[in-house]
Amino acid sequence: MAGDPVKDAFRAQLLLVSGIWTYKDTENPTPQPDIGARFVTIEWMDSPERLLAWGSPGSNLYKVEGFLQIHLKSPRGQGSAAAEVMARTVWTYFRARRFQTSESRDVRIVDITQLGGEVDGAQWVESLLVHYETFNLG
View 1 (tube, one colour):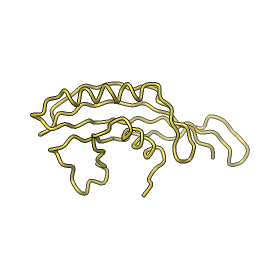
View 2 (spheres, rainbow, N blue to C red):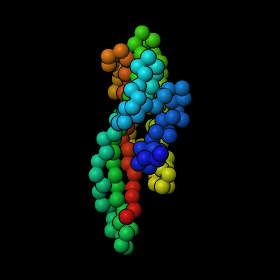
View 3 (cartoon, rainbow, N blue to C red):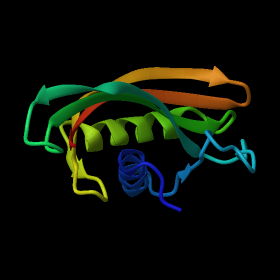
């Protein structure tokens, strides 16, 4: 079942670049992710819309700037190298990228930053912060 078009577009782009890494939906965590396997999670931090321009009724232009964190999780004991390589791959893929949602809305990556790695329980986690913007008519 389709969800929010912007989130769906990000998930699709992430699946294209991450290849064998599995995307895990942590907003609806049933079943729980297998911590013995490599997987990717996304943490969303959206901001409200801002009116940019008035149009005819129903045609105002709004801008949404949002942030998300991509977490690449690899089992400890397998080393951090795989997560570091995938973090660099994701960073390179999303840098200055544009793509469209299912509603033909453009999503533009403003900035992407590698946040580094840390141990989280039984996993090594590499994280990236993505700043994006999209525009809505309505």
